[in-house]
Amino acid sequence: MEQHLRTKLIETAHAMRRDILDMSLRCGAMGAHLGGSMSCVEILAVLYGAVMHLDPADSLSDERDRFIMSKAHSSMAHYAALRQADFSPRRIYRAQWSAASFCSSIRR
Image 1 (tube, rainbow, N blue to C red):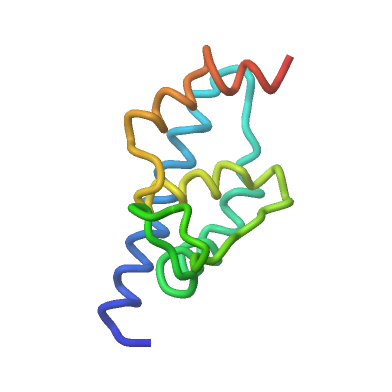
Image 2 (cartoon, rainbow, N blue to C red; image 1 turned 90 degrees about the horizontal axis):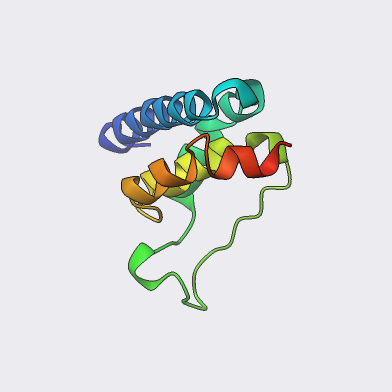
């Protein structure tokens, strides 16, 4: 792997970890599963950053790769990967993960 790509993937993984921490803080007292999300950050950073064929501008293309994450306790990592790959703008991501919206709707 060339050094430039390696550096980019490391930076992406760090940004994903910051996003995951931000999402977990936004869940407030509802809590969040940090372990599952943090454990797969590098895998998702490499998949979304170097392996999968994706184009946020053409997300409905038949030629794109698809990824299904069945480990629900890692959903924050998947959301962070989507955000870092430009599939989810920061303003939408921040609104989704406020304690008053998404987190409170899944934990009652």
